[in-house]
Image 1 (spheres, rainbow, N blue to C red):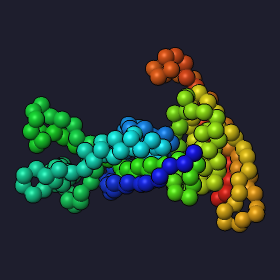
Image 2: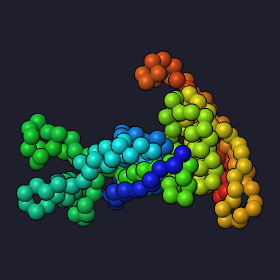
Image 3: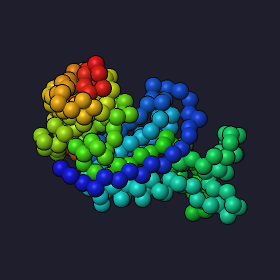
Length: 228
């Protein structure tokens, strides 16, 4: 598949306490309207980056609009809501940050509260277009693959094998990705490189989207273009 890849990044330095997600990069491949990307950024503000890759431009643009609503707005005093919140509640520097607004009891923005968010990066294009869509910094990738055709799952497997570091985790739903194959090494033309995943676990649970049981598959990249 082909597309017209673009990327929009919104940065937000975080002072969140350290946990298992701190400093990691999460990516939702097939991010749609950005729901999971934004949720991950809000639930784990210590993430280095919460990314989304979406092929459909209309969905990508909608997600950009939602992320835009997390940008600071003026409160009438020359300060942004985010800056005001930072000064009042954390006593840290007044650096502009992404914030998830929790509406208050009135329409007055000053009655709202804010949650810190991790930086967000939204990319528009085909996951198979590895010259323009970058996922090489990803630690954990999620793919809602319940409705994805085999050729797209193969592109995802190859993109991770080409760009990502060994140890990268990939999670899919209901359908498995190809666990091995060969790629053209772009750094050394003429040399094929093997990529391989190991299946760590398969977990069943209820999913309202499919109206019943859904299976999540957890993979780890063992080897690829970036080594073993």
